[in-house]
Image (cartoon, rainbow, N blue to C red; front, side, top):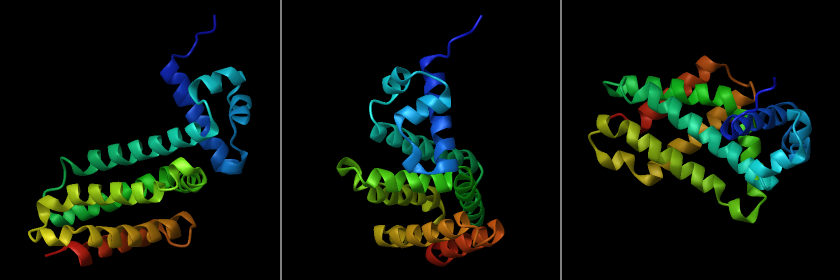
Length: 190
């Protein structure tokens, strides 16, 4: 007897397959029809979960962000007792997320930017990242002006550049980790 997946399990399966399609063939190859074919389901099933390609891309994007937040929270929330530990844990968590979803995440973001409803997605990502930085480092920074929006945006830009080079295999994980830690220390250490 074949058991049917719950709606949530089916959605997760479809998102896994969609991510695999992006990993192997790029976002251009991802359509609701190719998703149905690759997942071995009927087209109406994919359309029931994601009415449009745009909503599928948005679901992948949100899933990656959720993984980032969960990874970051698990590593930092209850473990960082000082600034240096927060730097190390943040760098580890960030690179772990980049390793899990970095290239696919970037492709999804660029694909989403083509839709008028999501042309601002880079700003949303930057603001989200800056908020995470502030939450992580607020307990360890005595001069709160060091957590200004402009400084956070500068840190985001630097770390994003490091992540891009890491995704492109132009630097090793250890080098990327050290570079991220250096950026954080230079910008946030009292």
